[in-house]
Image (cartoon, rainbow, N blue to C red; front, side, top):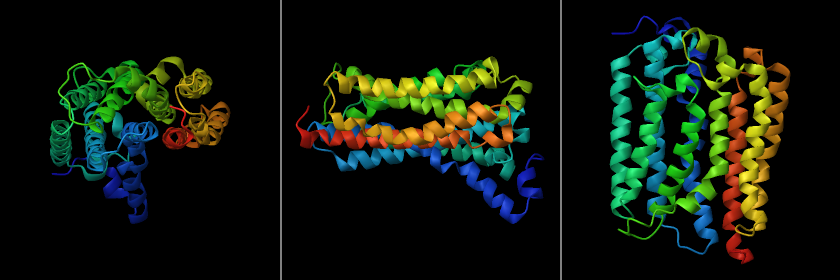
Length: 318
């Protein structure tokens, strides 16, 4: 039975529904899911290690499946609180079939974790545990009774999940099989994942700019709701600066090749984002696409960094 809130499907034109479905699928956001494995592959290639292509592709697919679960359950939990009343591009709003979406979401979770388990058995069992940890943080962010994202903890949780945890799992999944419990590369994972994970957290931060009023009205006290759009806009350059600084420090210390500065290809969209939010932070309609500008920074920066790290093999700088 269709939910009465399925207004997007019932009352929109075919062209409008197509646009809403494009927003609901959120395909550009899958950059945040695959970035840890892309970075790990670049770093390992740069150090002269052989990349296990089957493990790489498997981890990419599993990451996408798990983010589909995260996005679908986010829509479900938002629907349960009424916060998606104005969110016409929610999959729940578009279909009105909560049970179907719930079943689909947990099917994606089961498939993703099953694939991760297979990959872990061919590399290191800690891969499975690290990914489980990331999924738990994802649930803490949005799921009852915790809903930590509603209390302003979304960005820190995002940094931990897509930074040290996901990057450690990615480094391990590409490595030869090992059962050494002390071989989790926390140092390398934190060094490699810290900066890009700040960029990923920025995507989440910017996703809330245009819905501050609705979030506040429904008790969703995100960081942006708590500090206001003006202070939030002033905070965005600090996100970007911190992300880049954490990537440049290893270069300046000689731990990474100078080619890792290629991550600066993400700077132009970052500058555009800063200017847009500084001028229009309190105009929801004008900044509704700010998260995609943040996403362009995140994606280009991460890809540039990965390529730069990979080039280290030819520069003999590791």
